[in-house]
Amino acid sequence: MEFLFEYGLFFAKAITVVIAIIAVLIAFVAIAMKQKGQSSGKGQLEIRSISEALDDVADYAKKMLMNDAEIKALEKRKKAENKAKKKADKQQAKQLKKDVSTNPSADKSDVKSSGSVESAQKPRLFVIDFNGSVDAHEVDNFREEITAVLLAAKSSDEVLVNVESGGGVVHGYGLAASQLERIKAKGLKLTICVDKVAASGGYMMACVADKLVCANFAIIGSIGVIAQMPNFNKLLKKNDIEFEQHTAGDFKRTLTVFGENNDEGRAKFKAELEEVHVMFKDFVTRNRPTLDISKVATGEYWFGMQALELGLVDELSTSDDVLLAFNQTHDVFGIKYSEKKNVMEKLGIAAEGMLFRTYNKVFNQHQTPIA
Image (cartoon, rainbow, N blue to C red):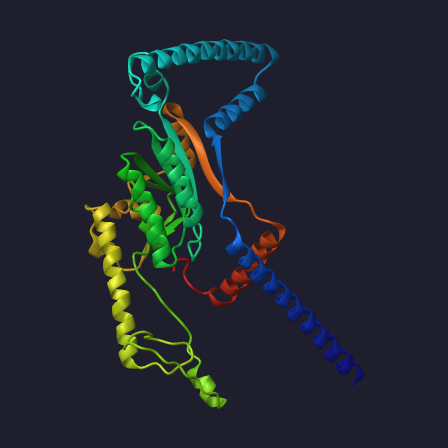
């Protein structure tokens, strides 16, 4: 009996500690979200040269496989190339100055003449990464990145977006897809790469591409709509707990978590899902008109090789190989927009992420990877 008493006391203490930790985490989340709402929203745009990074990797790998004489020869050749490049840049700057002076009304970025900067430089490729979550909050930074690209891009430049998402809320991913349409509206060629998954809302984004590339076993498709919720009405009644909900409008609330649902509400809710599905299918058809939408808009997903046969994608490859190919013909730049966060925000986001992952592990463990 003494053992059981001590074990019960220990168990009670453990439960108390766990509850205290959860309470602290929730407090962190609340404080962080409050501070986030009061923040100025100012972030930082980072632009890095992917081409230079790839060149550095190539040079290092080559040097590791060379003897001393070969390394000296390589360095000598590099010096000569850098000298020639500096000379060419200087000549290009002079030519640009001359072109602008002869045509003062011309935009410097659009000056085009024989020997001008525009004709001498490689076109640029702007690379943006989008790793989407269910609530699609990443679109806030995504729109800033695209705006930066559109402000800097020339007509010869292109955009590559790496999309990784299993989908989420319709309005969030609809906005993300609209951001991609801005790129095409500007007349820039858009390539989208999918290494792991672009399903549901993720495919809503991916289908906008002029060229859609995915890896062999990337998960593609899931052109469907899903909504689900628990209902605790019977549990409340069993414990003599009443729930009241008042609305103005027949369908202000079709289904409820705590109230008693009826067939009319269910039918309306299902009809709304069907309407969203029709809009989803129309959007995909508009962007990929050759696709047999009736065959693929079943909510199913396919792996890359199957998706290519169905016309859901244009090519099988990895984003790595696509980047290496572009690097031969373009100057490649990575674009990333991020907001500075204080300590409380960082702790709050970490706590929120842990709670969200725990929820997914408990409630979504046996579901398919596509929502």
